[in-house]
Length: 246
Image (cartoon, rainbow, N blue to C red):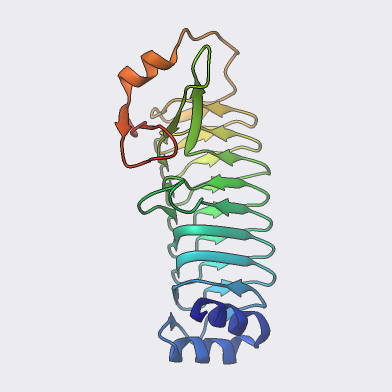
């Protein structure tokens, strides 16, 4: 009920009054910050100097922390037990979808972190089953890039399948082109440019330009995957194997 009160305050009241009331209720929002008419249903809200949340965002997450001049524009949807951490001048554009399933589908803590002047433009999808980190001065550009921190692998016959989880880490001074897919456990090093429509299924570290790979066959099986990855026995309703960042 208390979280809904925070959301109602942010949604219906002018920015200055909303900030005053939210600070009275224990949040830490600088008076120079601005909150548009958005639904902020969060346990903890921190906003630094001249940070901004625009109109018509639906944000129902655990915690949100915006550094100085960090900004979230309009029509973004963020949902689930996760923390959003945006450093100085980081920016989220319009119409992005960030989500994480509730327990017992997802367990433990997860976060979405944007470094200094990191930019997530518009119409991207971020699955935060595990954490996603986007480094300083990095841009996720264009539209429709997808970050997946979980996936499934099925047995050749019968009902057996496992879930593969892995955090994603994007380094500093990186550019990710439009409509890319970034798979679980992938790390992208510093000073890397990824061309549009690329699928990143393994980590890359050498600075330079990367473009879409040719389609190729990879011999694999569910038993081989089980041997390579570490099983997480905390999950009871699905078999989960973890794919660590290299």
